[in-house]
Length: 243
Image (cartoon, rainbow, N blue to C red):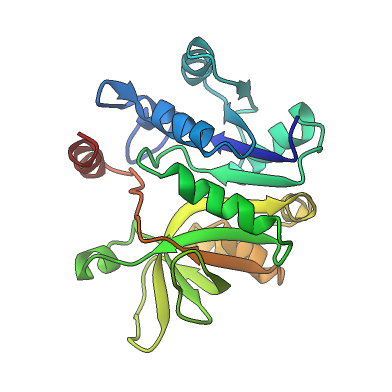
């Protein structure tokens, strides 16, 4: 067992795109694309966490590691904690929560995040990229992150806020948030002990629970922009991109 673990929480019950992890891109299920990217990052044990037999059997049949979890977790972070707690016995020092709906994430992005966490400068670290156009900014499916300074390639700054909609001022440092988080062991244990906050529930963004508890989140920048697949339109776009 290594000091780092990458855990991919995923389930079939997404409301906007049911059975999303099993949707095929270039003949391969979306969750397998994400799993393979995590393996290629070569920075820790990779585990899929799911309550669904279909996903479990798919990962196992492809020589991967998959842990069946309880079906009633409120968040993906609660799901990864179950694996960290029961399967990994709380041994890894850094735990990366990689969303299972980013099939074109680059392995080097995952490694950049994990490497940064070894510096022990924050509780949680995540990634962001620039918006391509105004349509991306206006899309409420795209999460925005506000930082305290301008971001540059492979550099990290502190996150001030996360949101989906609202007025964006030109003088603010606002970026397209990417759904990957790395926690220190201590931060993950603390995070799951906290109650969900009003702001977290209103915006449907887990990371706000950490900010509300004054946990320090650092954000890195990448010029690549992995697409989170939430809708049929997203699926069509990613199939074109990954051809």
